Image (cartoon, rainbow, N blue to C red; front, side):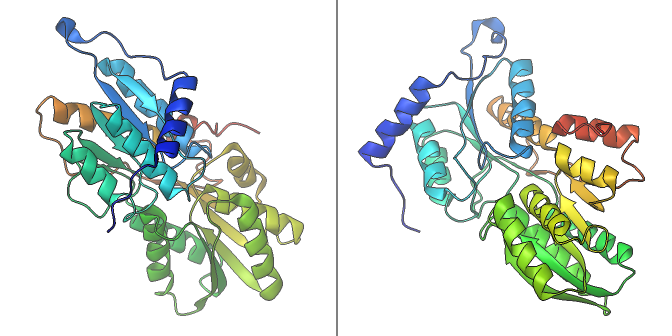
Length: 331
């Protein structure tokens, strides 16, 4: 793969942004007067409900461990070049470590390996990277999450009918794993037919558009599975506009106040939630432990949960959703 490098203009622009934006509050003082570590935590983008929750988890770990955190994300989850530039910038700033959610399993390989070669360890979170240079990988078992979505959708449509899949962004390992898990599992139901699958590119407006088209084409559609939060939001809005709420069962992925309200109102059947707080927390913890010379597991897999009207008010789900910033009790 051709290594990408920052142009002088792009680097100057990013430095200006960093200089003009206040960084996250520093953690507590390092023990014994040691140098305070600085970690860069780089999400795919600082959008949706998911990434701010990752940020809270990462900041909690940094505060607990006395680490200064620099949080920088691209403007959206399709900006591979911008995310590469952010990593390049953090290499130039000589941070002590990087926690990264790569937008692409392939496009970020060169710059991650460049960071490691420069003596900056990297922990990958949320979405996989085609490299063996990272310290650890902290993420949901996304394939299993897709299987959960397929089994839930099969159950609520009575094991038969036409279904559609709303995908995220090509090259995003996390959501591609969900999509594969869904397709593999739904194929085991002979009376269910996957009639359409479309990318929504991490955009609820785009998801609304593609679901509207699918609903118009398949008037007898029984169900929809979406690979992420904006896909679920767009599908829900399209179903409402088409008068298909309740007739077309929608199983989403991730959470927000809008999606939880949809479940409570009966407009959205269910959603599968990850643990983004723990993803941020455990990513920072793994990086810190590695720097301290401790053995770090190659993978850490926080468990995903299916949220339905039946368990929405349970203590376990409430705690999960509160960490997401989407209170299960919100009416």
